[in-house]
Amino acid sequence: MEVTEKTAADPHALDAERLADFLGPHLPEMRAPLQIERIQGGQSNPTYLLSANGHRWVLRKKPPGTLLQSAHMVEREHRVMKALHGQVPTPRTRVLCEDPSVIGTNFFVMDFVEGRIFRDTTLPGLSVAERVAIYDAMQDTMAALHKADWRVAGLEDFGKPAGYVRRQVARWSRQFHASKTHDIPAMDRLGAWLEAHAPEEDETGIAHGDFRLENMIFHPTEPRPLAVLDWELATIGHPLCDLGYNCMPYYLPRWMKGCGGFADIDISGLGIPDEKTYVARYCRLTGRESIPNWPYFLAFSMFRGAAILQGVYARSLQNNAAHELAREVGLYAAPVAEIGWNIANG
Image (cartoon, rainbow, N blue to C red; front, side, top):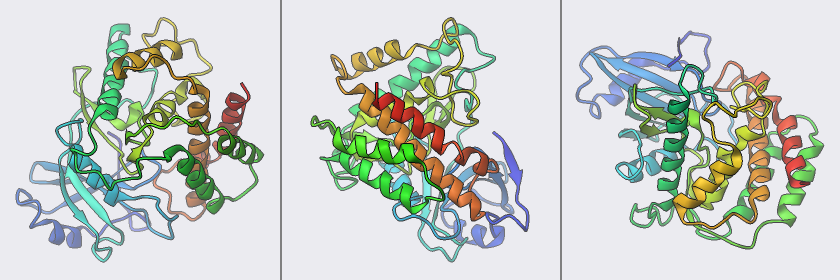
């Protein structure tokens, strides 16, 4: 796990003493001065490793500054992780703080999970058999999430059970325009196409919203998921939106740093399933015969991905983005929108 020390000039720096005072009653095992290290990796909510007398935890907070409405919802992230703990691999949550006076924004703390995070979707250094097992385990976990009973989990009011796709298209269109810094014609065309071609068939399940390999922690030596991370976009919604997002690497090139793509390399022989095989296996796991509107869910995922990247870029201009490469990565919004538009046009 890559970490960086906080500095006085860092807009994400935390007041360790004030934070320790707040956490004391919630983390009784914390007996020594609290140490804080910034974790690099995500583009959204700043994340930190907390350490004290041999124990470790992870803190997730909203970024500083003016934020888009409904973005960076650490409160929802905390709730869904707590509700699903035991059904889907999630870290144990310890406390949610909705008092911004403690460290500047709302945050929650969860247990640190020791394991492997694969930031490169081609899984360099692993054998073919290991890659097969990792991709199968990722898909098994996603299918288990989509089959989980959200009512039993106490998430009845976590989202509206109908009309998810249309609402999502409208939401990400608003998010894009709210963070727009320059014209991206492909986004306008793609947004109009998605609105006009939304599938009539509706399904309801728990949609993670950012289900990808990098957001999972695997056992240190086994191809076994220990935790799914980054639940801030989770809601009650259409599970195929997760699958479409999970399949974006099949369409994104390697030069897009941090996007996990392998569209421009030959994956045959690596142990990574091709898209057709991967989707067919998901259908078997979830009891589907096929996915008639598959291109729509892929195109929507590109649209949403481009809107997220535009938000990353806009935050980088305000100097409150969570990742040091935010400005470079944020400029991928336009090419990702073009890829989505090409998928929509078949």
